[in-house]
Image (cartoon, rainbow, N blue to C red; front, side):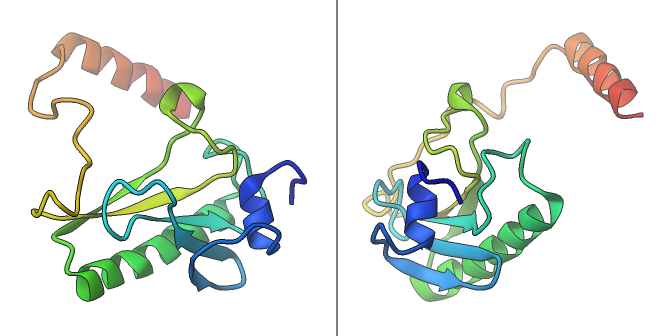
Amino acid sequence: MSDQCIFCGIINGAIPSAKVYEDEATYAFMDINPASEGHLLVIPKRHSKDLLEIPTEDLAAVTATAQKIARQVVGELGADGVNLLNCCGADAWQTVFHFHLHVIPRYRDKGKDKLVLPWQPDVPGDKDTIVAVAKRLSDALA
């Protein structure tokens, strides 16, 4: 754990949280700045700064916990859908540097849901650029 990390402080009980779930590897609690009713965070108990640093086994545990909670968000809260969101790096909106997944219930009722898309997913990109980037990444992963 990191002495400077607010999420590590939540895990060790020094900072209060509205806990939703805990197991050996993960801890889930309500987000204090929710995008929708029921918005919560799932974190690994072992400190990792971000997606690039988290060990695979911790990432798998966090993802499994997020899936378990997402099922309950739909069943118990009546959400119409769920977003899982991770922000990796300050330029990608990460504000707490302890890996975390946001579990964000989505509702047709906008009184419960203030989240909007930050881009237009139905606007096509440049096909040549898409193919060039795909090749570059594919070659790097080979």
